[in-house]
Image (cartoon, rainbow, N blue to C red):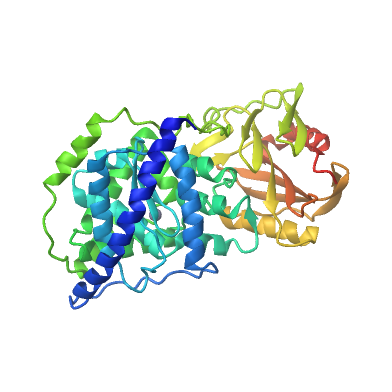
Length: 483
Ligand SMILES: [Zn+2]
């Protein structure tokens, strides 16, 4: 990280905390004032089951936010900060008291990124892309996306996702949860290995959570004096842009539950929009403030201040022909943990907790998810049990939750990997290419009790041309964890 970035972080971090404290007082007062307003019938939105405490949400979110501020270009502009803070405060004030936990620490940080995206982390930190603001045609549309994100925070969807994943988490807890919120390429940058590639487990909200965030977001908007239909309009803009650019950014973390605009409009018809000062005329000057900034970066450009070696968003194009494994092999290092031999035509994609090796056209976005159709992944996962069979089952359960249709294709076998006892489990699933795919999961324990896995993926029709390579790669794995 360079000094300039440090300065920006320090400046944007501290004032936002002060603003937050001031706002909390305002927030309580506003809720008292709002209470007597009788709203029409509205859909009751109940937070999902969650085994984390709100304090843990905050802790996890602050840590992930720190990462985000290092990875992404934070905009340091008073006019933009103030405007965003004002919308954010207005929405927080309009949040239902029973969900607005007093421990939450809200902040609203503009990022100089061109994708139409925004994300919120557990416990309150929210990030809004310049691309989102520039694509909006009025303040209500920006407020709509922010209300949706705020609803994820209030309903604690990030840690609810982690709760669903039960005892199994890949990588650091904070990383996994940040990934859950962020999704796509961003998730990779922040979560560093939480992304699994086989679909995007733990990487995105379920459609059910999305609908909850839409409905609660609409309710908050109405209470804050915004027309909830603006949220539906912004989603249409996002949808159009992700179709035209093929950009999966927003959709990858916020899958469309279907009929979005319709049910938002229906909810809106039940809501009474609070009367508030009209700030819409200020929106144009807010948008204009972005013109003075350096050009927006794309999230797929590697961060200058990142030393993490995250890979590209895709390797070739999914759907194009995938070449068979080369007959020549090279040795690759997985940090200090392992070494492995892989075909020379497989590209390495590394992150903190895992490494993939994929041939051309085998890794990239499909309908908003990053998938990998051919290749291998080696990585470390937290094991909920000291029993290899139980730990493996938990690992496969987590995979299956994120990859509906994944099922056993035979009995697990005991074998050896790097001269230690391992379990090999054959699975079949649905390939992103439409056909069936074969997945092999090989697991063994590391000396620290974590699970080491070697995972192979190939569509059924290419299985025979990959079998020998998968075996050779597997046999070459050498673990260096001193066991
Ligand atoms: Zn969402």
